[in-house]
Figure 1 (cartoon, one colour):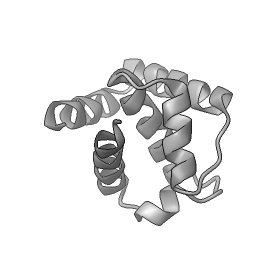
Figure 2 (tube, one colour):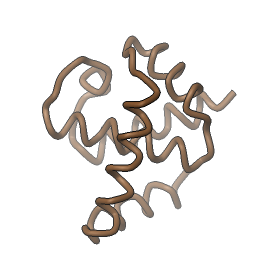
Figure 3 (tube, rainbow, N blue to C red):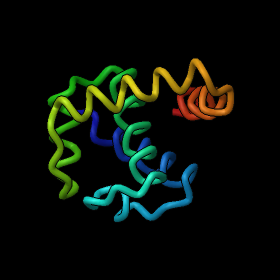
Figure 4 (cartoon, helix red, strand yellow):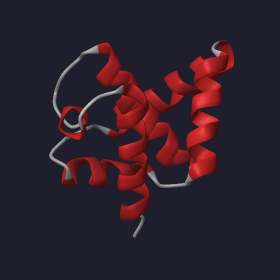
Length: 98
């Protein structure tokens, strides 16, 4: 139902981090890719999308992820927003555009 919004967030996050869409859905632990994924989880959750829907959208792009991983990623972004003004401003910019 919210596939278009999910894909828009994917595009915005990839642009922000300077990574290819394919890289976002690969099993890599590169810090920039992990940060991008976590931000994607956060944006989707605040839309609001349920965790299961986020998991399904990730799986439809070839990336299997546990619900606990999504939840953890959301918490990480929330804590970064408090301590890092740049994170907060970038997130607000994306939210306002979509």
